[in-house]
Length: 243
Image (cartoon, rainbow, N blue to C red; front, side, top):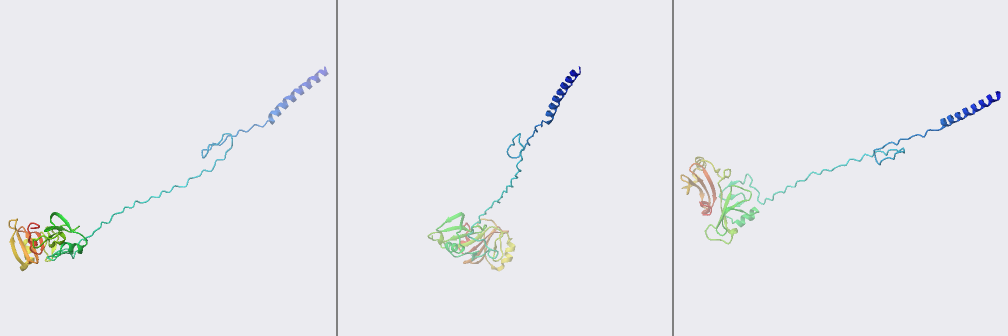
């Protein structure tokens, strides 16, 4: 009986030892660590299952945009004839600005450095032409033969009259278009050499001052000055441009 108890005890101890070893073996088994890879959104995609150190984020250098202001080139107009200065804006029987009464068109153009402009009244280049200065409005000239005989080309016509029908252009004796006849009479006094009835305007006149070679002719409508002519006869007294 005692022998049987010893055998049973030995078997029990063997069974317990086996269980202990299983428990120890299980306890000594290291758990395989699970590493979650960091998911990096910068740069190349990361590999799952590996610990990846994210590459440093490179901030792109700011792009500098050079804004070049548009350069507007304003063409400077070429002016061959300078506008008259205040001291030259005088209408007289000797001329206006650098235009000289009694010289030919060719001589005057050489002096002023540019050509006259021919307005819409035109004319005959061998007998008589209406002329204007570039960039000077309200003033016109007449180039004529003086004798009535034709010449060979416009350059040989004589500039014989300067005229205006616009206010603001003053004569050497202080007269301008728009002045009343009474004021003109007071200003001119006994320098008036003649008065003639107007060819077209009833009640109007031509008030004449000076000699045939250096003369003013003031047109009136009976109440005020409507036009001024200065120059030499017969051109200064023409009533229809070139006639």
